[in-house]
Length: 295
Figure 1 (cartoon, rainbow, N blue to C red):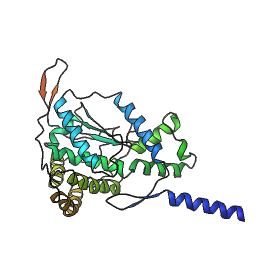
Figure 2: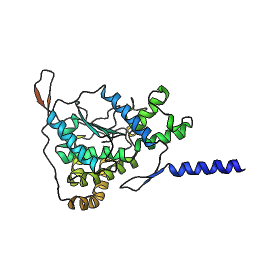
Figure 3: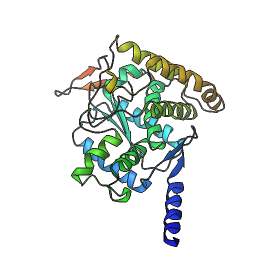
Figure 4: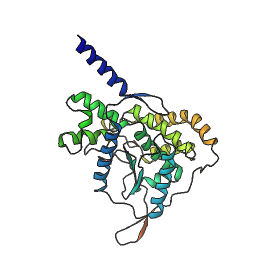
């Protein structure tokens, strides 16, 4: 009997230790993955992704992405992470962030962003996924479901675990393995991201305008239900407008504000070294890197 009492005590201590509160939203989350382990997995996944991607040749816009990212990171709940920001050459309208502060934006997204504040809308949303530890939350759920893996021993080096980890982080190979974060995760990332956007000096009103532009560019396209766990465009914009009151208080309290920032006039270099202006394309689901976060 004494043994079972001790076991029960240990069990409750572990449960309590695994409960965390997310900044800004103040929501409770159950996470069994130690944060050091989570950061290590994010770094491994990031390095693996970058092996298959090409950096943009537009150094001016790349510098702007880094500047925006650092401003957002400094006002986040994890300013001391080893933050890294990349601009990837691709027509995909995409962006992602991984545990440990590894963030990338795809050049195809720039025409929709239009300005610094538009880009900050997306980047702050992605950074919010890192701060809220949504990837670790999904890994925890997978561990509970499988009940066969120790949280401290999961690794990308284990082929059996690799698919589960990459899918949880939003960077799996196919839709069957990688789903966007849940609607509640996405709404939470919008809320946290809007706050960080405002606190870093970017006009939070641009967030609703960005999502309207993105919705309009879909030109009536509908995402199949099994691919879309994100809020509908109207729902997302309505929620953002609800969060705006708090964000505008933070924004108006700043001594230094950037407003919309610079207009993004992105030009990419082709294989012959000639500069060509970016094209406006229609957003589409992208297997792999998670910005169905934008859907």
